[in-house]
Length: 198
Image (cartoon, rainbow, N blue to C red; front, side, top):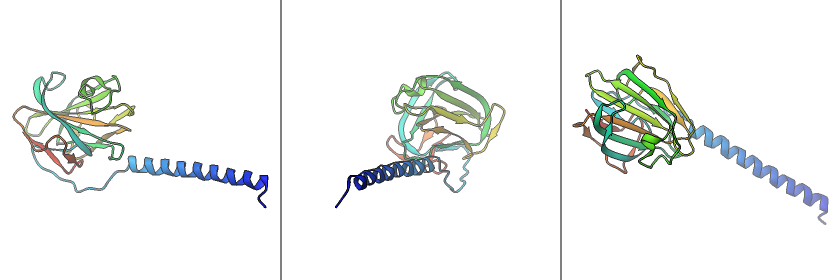
């Protein structure tokens, strides 16, 4: 015969099991989200590698007076929850510009997020003297951008430069005339997929 007390304890055990399962899922999610994969260190002069894992959502000419000084080519990598959220420098160079913009939190795949969302832009002078930039963009859920390099620093190709916590998109800006090696919809792997050749 099942007593009321036994039913009460059975119910309590089910609640504890659900709480444990939820906590375990959160731990697994955070470990996966902030993982840092071990990958071959690729080096290729005048080639920019993907600065993040994700999918190409923008390849177009844009007006970017903030740093590039006029029209340039923009490539954007959109990161989902399942992607690694560490960011890497796409090319060797000296940091000659850095700016943080405290903006909105539109969905990161929307075109206006590049200019209107909170973002950090880093401009580089490459070893061949060309000017490029990358921009870490916070999204609707992302609320924290971490960017290590400072003006005057030298960064190496595929060196870790920061992360976007729970976020969302990295743009790359290169001079007009550069050869784009990817298309919209392509999945890219940070430090491993060539994006563009200067």
